[in-house]
Length: 338
Length: 284
Image 1 (cartoon, rainbow over the protein chains, first blue to last red):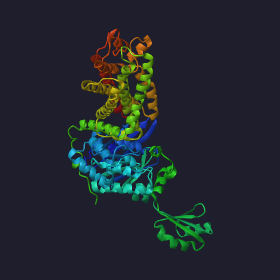
Image 2 (image 1 turned 45 degrees about the horizontal axis):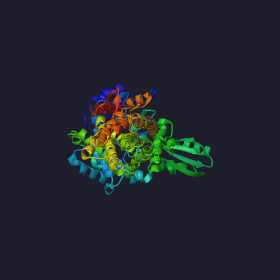
Image 3 (image 1 turned 60 degrees about the vertical axis):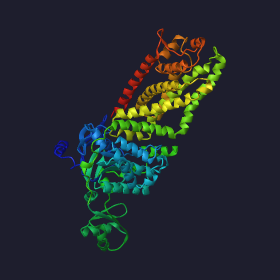
């Protein structure tokens, strides 16, 4: 299957596909961190890798960014091979890592100037470009301030600005909201949306937050180094199909019998009855009529990405939530030093 | 609806002199950080000053002066060298901090060659170290060491050579260290022995054999000696004192000339510079 996909994409011309990946794999000793992933990302698309910690998201992003050598398959960014043309690839990508990678003893502007020079932004354009990206993330007023005086959210937004400084074809965001509060997260996603709208950049992000994946045009669910599902959020949810309606009644057996007699797909769950049906909310009056009394509560549930994830991996993604990750610790430690 | 990017407009040709500009930018960052961190300037002066005044005055009483030339004057060039060396190593090791705090990643993922990054870092660290050494040099009159304009330039030149060698060495070490804890180990096991065995703090003539061997194996020895020789060249050093406080290094009975010592230091610098570039060019 990998072979076929590879053959298909060889013909693809530069510009038609921004990220072109086939059979990409990375082994660390006996561990298959990434076990042959294949996907394409089109220009201007927002593409999300959704998966639990350790699923292979960061390893994949590191391979796409030329920081880690693949042990199998290939990946091309804007037509350039990550293995054989790493410098070309690097010039065309912007990166926002999990951990903060600013020099906090430099000002925002100095950090950007450093980046502009290393990424070969022409001298004549440097000034204007720095002003432009600072404006896009609304940090123009803080240009001359040391990054050590920035909040975590401001630093993160400066990193997005920096990632966009050299007008990359793709902006990579590796778990960009780790350690940020919800309000800051929202601001950060606004910045990403701005970049996409104003600069036409393709966005590749990894996350283990469902609500963040929702902003993507397409989502790849990755588990144990493999893509288990890949589609738009809507299409993924449609796979789960029906809404579910949970009823709590005086007599669940009687309710179940009546519902089944009326042709509903229903089953007992815990202390209640669950009905699987399209348009759950619209069905509620008919359901109540069918059960005919004794209903104490009704709960309608529309499929979420959470359900999609559970469906494909047999696990809930949130089991990792709230645990401090290693980069979370880094951030905390850095904060403590200031 | 979506604004499609125009691939043709993206990152055209890398501008001319891109690698050179990268070197200069990385160099500039070192200077900005040096200038901004006044506390560091003062603290890194404190240790050489302690050696100069405490050890210098303490030992001068014990050693006494020979024909009006005392131990402090002997010690002074060694202390200048010492502050250059420790600043150079500290600057280089800051890469370990960059690694810990992520900035190294920002540099390594840029479309610039590792050689340019290592060159910029080495030259930046070396410049800062030479500056620090020159600040020490300004204290010469306090010790009664005579300075001339030509001497100051000679010393700065030698400081730069020494600093480039030590920064290259430090950058190489930093490329192999992944944790801040490793830094302490390097300091204890490498920097201090190198400083103490370099002739910075005592004359290298008439030592027991084992100590003679160790000092001659230490590359830093050949960096300290030229500095002391140029300083002594403009002082009034009576022959008796010159014999007692020898500024030169003998190897197998030959007195090494300054140029040969500099060649040795330059070779040391080159080897570790190449190793440092290699150290940062690995990709897993």
